[in-house]
Image (cartoon, rainbow, N blue to C red; front, side, top):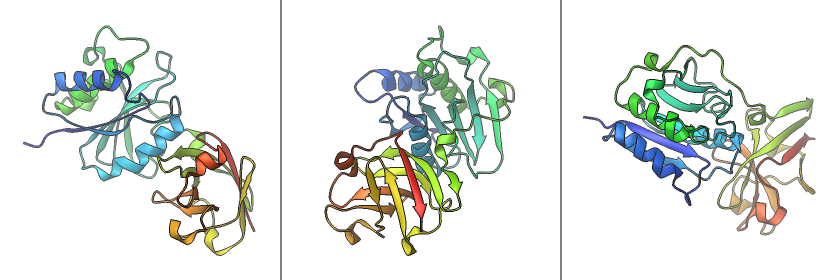
Length: 263
């Protein structure tokens, strides 16, 4: 029999007990579940970064996978907890925009608000819904409980504006930094579909005190010590530094603004 697969993505890090507690809850409910960590190194409270990382990973898992996402600075507030069916997968987490990129373009989505408390762990902490709501719901879903059992239809979900660049003129876009990877590449939200192909023309990307006007097809095509733009594997424009860390060299990090001008 095929084991249910559950992925976990959080901003909890690895120094504390939080991820282990969630895994323990899931396995207590569904001992046969296979748990896969996408990452727990989302920068604290950075919902847009969590949205980006989820979007880069979930589609490579088999249909039927359950994705638990906990980047939740609004935990304990009136923000909704949801269970989403989309693209042959299920997603469990807060309705705060963290699913914005993952669900973009997948077609129809069915969203349920998590209100049936019999599927929660009790007592429910006001600060740890990952353990007490999202993990147990994922375990019950993995055990085959029908999604309709968890609560009513929720309608439209929160969309996070920071995941999309803003076109401010015919030749200019304002964006933000979504993620910095372990190599120091700075991933912006300027996706390849939203901007013209800059490799063939003149451009300037302003980020902090830096102005970048060099594009390279790959890392080896750039000069050592030179900041350049690259089309990353996720189809977003990245600020990179050959054989070095662009973020350490510039101080630019998650949440910082960028401005792209073409021509």
